[in-house]
Image (cartoon, rainbow, N blue to C red):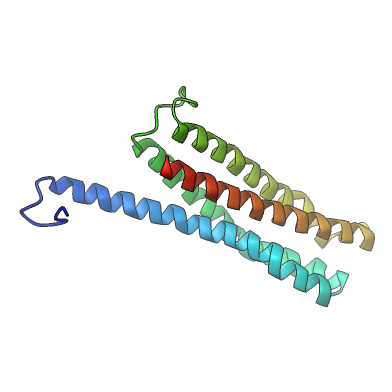
Length: 175
């Protein structure tokens, strides 16, 4: 076992790098929990309960209020992902550069993961820009019902894609 601190440690500068790497990985994981946790709870707990207990007019107020409250956390999580993900990518010795997408298993898994992350974010943008406004201000109640179904499908898709992203992350780390 190598000593972590003190005179027996010959690479004192490495301690700081290890701490930075750990903090960055932690922030990346925290952003994952916040983002995927929000959509999973919305898809599998909040929406089913609301759909059974709240009428359409109230849903038109409650769902947009939930989304407005969550939006700063979602945007902050995406910002944290961009910064920490870039750092983690560039500091990983398995990263061969942008032109070497299929240079090793890790690079391939990371590329697939990022394609899914882009799809996940695209679904989230679709929900926020098109679906939630249709819930808040529908043409009629039938349109609100359709929008709520789209919201349920979209949040379920994000939760499902998120689990695949986590699986790809684990596979990449193990490769």
